[in-house]
Image (cartoon, rainbow, N blue to C red; front, side, top):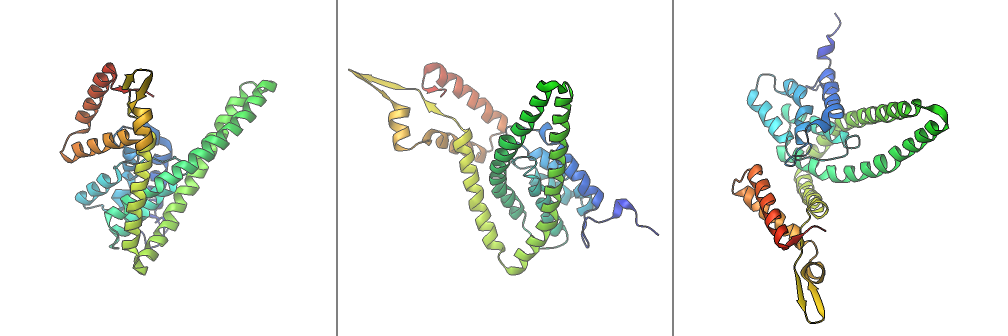
Length: 285
């Protein structure tokens, strides 16, 4: 009797079915841009990826399904196609955990955090800086030479087809290669080293995000006879560049530790921005 397609496993001895894995990939590539927010970025998209997976891993255990969803809904941000392998790897890790392997939840979180920065940088550079401009150049040239509407249609087909194809290959590579790599790490006794290294890399990635995305600029000028001393340019930028973004980030972190909600923190940021901006203490650079 032929095996039901719904129960065909993605890999021998595993818990995740091929149908669930394909559904998870489709959720990632198709709906990842639908649920951004300032607090978690793509975190909700990651949780959406695991909707079909958790029922393969913990069919009869709602509490463990909730634990997976909470873990996978944490902050995440990466290039969609190049970062697809991270989601495949996360599924492999969750599967190993469900099968009784010694895979801590923090390992999954730290590896995702460590990998998202490098893959985002590579993906943005190659996809947005090389692939898209080349395709646009070719299709615009065809349009100007008489192809008419077929130029935009060709571009849409090529960019969407290429995105789905590359994302699928990358996602499945992360799942299949990732599970074997995790087992090798566990069996070699290097788990603690991986956790430490991933934690350090994750902190470095988050530090880089702070520098690039948190903008706080002092607008105070001290005017004396014959000269003007700008506190931002002549003090902060000379003594400790990005000191104000760091201070703002640590202040928000302290508020989070005090159980402030994200809405209250956003409201505080808006209020501080309005008051300090109106008085000239802070300025937009």
